[in-house]
Length: 357
Image 1 (cartoon, one colour):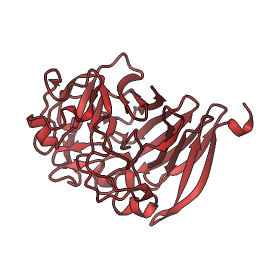
Image 2 (cartoon, rainbow, N blue to C red):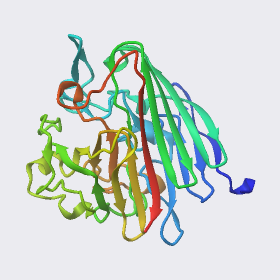
Image 3 (cartoon, rainbow, N blue to C red):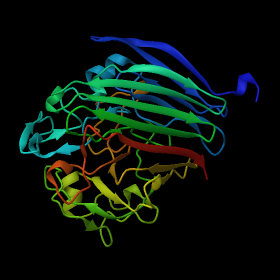
């Protein structure tokens, strides 16, 4: 492979924050796939992939400028934590001590609080070899930041390879018993961001169960079969096929905004979901080491968010597949534990693989 066709990474100025300068890192593989990531919030700003005819388009929702992300970002492309998803009433208990977090989603805590990991400036280091390029982002969340115990040191590695795979590897260590549940909140539209809604996308989720929620989107603690419900994506089904179903869970979410319990094969990476967009032929496969995935279909997008190229992001114009431990796990003893001890290292990996059919 000659030098011109090797994967590359380029750094440019993205803008300034109250904490310092934000850079934009553009990763490109030998086939022309591009991922642009800023160290502000670890946000995936662009994700440019080919369609069946070889035409490239940006398939992730986001903004053209840093100021837009700072002013009004519904988590487009961001790293979310310390706790991705919701915690009931912003409270949890560890060793008999109750911790109170911000209630920034009605009565509940969402995505790390008022200033979660999506709003901080990460330290960035570039990585490169002959088949891939990467970006290592590091951040230390201080003891009691946003109400969470322990100094938590986090390293998130984005890597783009020549197989058109974008991998995200998360690691964290704490000096005090805490909870940790990290994810990325990319919104996808495989027809091209801002071009159309996502209702014709054909989705398969590798899950026979999901976790029902109450009217505030907090899990009830049940683990319920998807069979016979609007939540059965065990075979590829258009997202829009049952999104308006007359079911209580659909009404609570305003559509899909639910955690699915993944069928897992061992401890390593396992298939979580696939998405096919018939017009472009783009096909996305999601693999993860996590036990769950939150499927959200853009129910809260209203057109007020004016995205890249001045395109408004309208109702259901993007979907998220947020790999995760389950929402409200600290308060649900039958859910997989999110407790992190000082003797442990938190590690999880998710891969988004793009191809065409």
